[in-house]
Length: 268
Image (cartoon, rainbow, N blue to C red; front, top):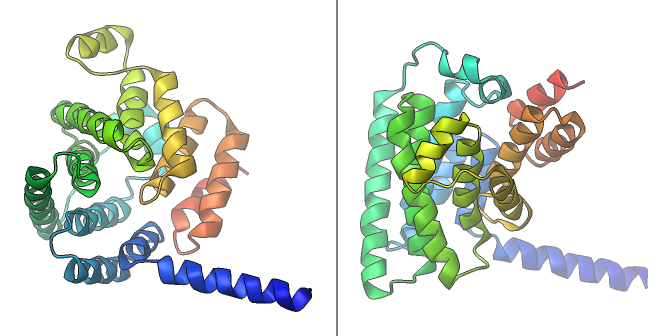
């Protein structure tokens, strides 16, 4: 019986390893702050699938996460303390990284447009579009501090995500865009929320949290990012047990990422 169990487990591990693509490996490396490895994995995927927009948009994600890590933007106090976040000193982004980031986003958009001309419901192309808009918005808001300029991309990302989910409701990464818009904009003062809603933005906090949970529970490439955002949301709500539980899970999954251990230490 024990031998049969071990044989079954071995077969499962071999199957799981064979299903792990360079794209999967790249995201795992990126979240673990192994950016050189992530870029190699994404480049390998690009060579294997030269028309897939997920290759270059993933490269752009790795450039952004590396810059956020270098500038120490992801530390929770910046997200939990609005005043500190808005009043933080002027940053010094790396212009070479920005150029590579923009170039990768451009390649992803060209490939996505080409794929959507062939099939308007192409899942990879629509997801890549959602990510292009989301990454561009993140860079504008988090690195360049151009908060108002980032809102149009946030809104458009949510709209494309809705189109994607209408065709592919099990693409759980797409729920992140809906969650981000609703949750982040729900934190604005009431008059601003009213103006945003007039402009077509969605600002429902509970809808935002529910959608973030969908990506955090069932997402693929964006699952860890949704989990981090939920940890920040828990901290904002002073739900320290939930924040600790989520951060402990991330720390165990990504041992090279010291951010999670640093945040856990603050909660002890």
